[in-house]
Amino acid sequence: MATVLEADHVKKYFPTGASKWLLRPTDQVLAVDDVSFKLEAGTTLGVVGESGCGKSTLGRVLAMLLKPTDGSVRLNGVDLATLNERDLNQVRRDIQFVFQDPYACLNPRHSIGESIATPMKVQKTHDKQGRRQRVQELMELVGLNPEHFNRFPHEFSGGQRQRVGIARALALNPKIIVADEPVSALDVSIQSQILNLLEGLQNDFGLSYVFIAHDLAVVRHIADEVAVMYLGKFVEYGDATSIYKTPRHPYTKALMSAAPVADPKIGRERKRIMLTGDVPSPVNPPSGCRFRTRCWKATDQCAEVEPQLVEVVPGHRVACHYPES
Image 1 (cartoon, rainbow, N blue to C red):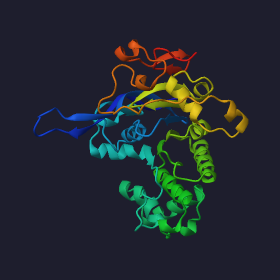
Image 2: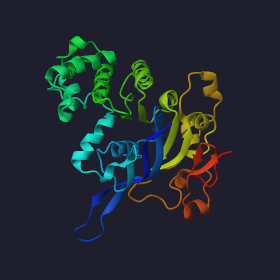
Image 3: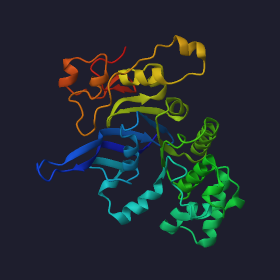
Image 4: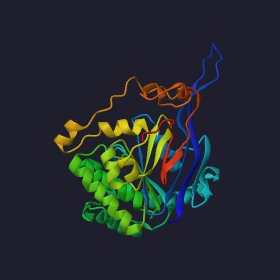
């Protein structure tokens, strides 16, 4: 399969401001710090991690809602960071974004039809009649009644609003959709409907997804590959089946142990790994391995040498000096 999106040593830092009196250099939040991966056509990459690990910032950088501080994001071989605004607007047809909050991502003063039609207006791809017809087609495609074209967001439920967000992302026939926790604000029953909708759209149109979530069960359901993120870096990356069956990084193993299971017998027998301490600040991350301050396997080497993502088995890479066997 062809590679449609490639991130190469992507970094995104945010300045925190400098002291007027001490004249210190401006501190920086290392939100995304040297992340690389490839996304193949028709596949899904799941990015998981705790809140604040940088996964949402990574998603925004991939969609060029934020410009990377360093590194490159290549769409079909074209480095998006080097494009001017005019060329970037043309490329944005191929990569669209689904936001986390279905309530905040829609303008309450615009009807659902206007919201879905906005990308077509910006890109000037249809006339007024063509936009209306296309919007109604999209509404039917995502499971909404086309007759509700003129209704407003407050007249829809959370799941229906997320369907509107998905329809808007599909308006320009993109090749890639970056979904930033698209089901985290929804009820469990509605989550499954949205996931099934995304899978159906992928099968019908050959879409590629970057699916960001903190729920391991959700990612397991939809992802072909999984990247586990901690404090701005990938600590484990590979085939979803391999990672879920044999997690190699201590942090991944701790996440797996905390995920709830439906079978109470298995839940009672499973040993929970309790991480001690708080997540370090991304302004001043620990030296060496960033997870070492909470890891039960940490040694002096972990403090002195930063581990690199190394392939432990084909298709499964881990950034750890002492990976799990």
